[in-house]
Length: 213
Image 1 (spheres, rainbow, N blue to C red):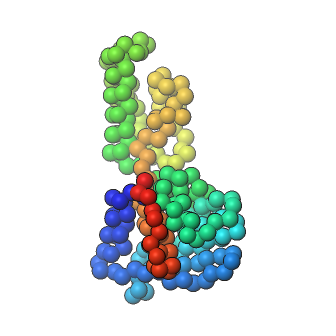
Image 2 (tube, rainbow, N blue to C red):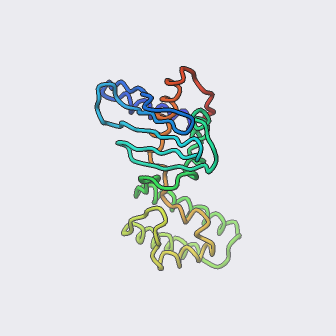
Image 3 (cartoon, rainbow, N blue to C red):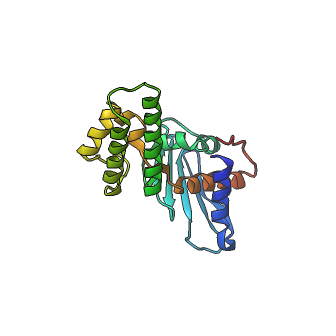
């Protein structure tokens, strides 16, 4: 988690002068359970973290959503501080959760525009000869129109007309940028990781080296 998002999460937790702290609920050789919540008892953004040390699972439950991430091998509470610092790596370990990504209209349009500009550059550099510039612009406008009436989500099925247009420019569109138009990491993940990392550091009474990714 880079410095920008760590500071954002810290600011969210300190909003309205709330005083968040960590409480050790239970720990033995198999499990670690920690609550991260406002000292005044408010449930706002309160989160419980459960670590199955032997199975390698991190379970997150709380006001910002729920998540189960699995490593399939023993983990330590301290090592997880490092493991979840790389948000992309952490997402890859998540088996189920509340929404991991957002798909805002402006992000979809921005990503589609970036793709259009890339293909226009290839066309102007004579790296494509199957389409004219006018046709390319029309195709991307049509993609934009289709997407404006379609609710994107993780693993959703695109309309056939849209995939036909994408395939025209990239036969393997599902492996490239077309497959993740508008996708942005949901900010809840930064709240989860900050709460866990900060909470463990307070409970252990030490600061762990967390390389900003």
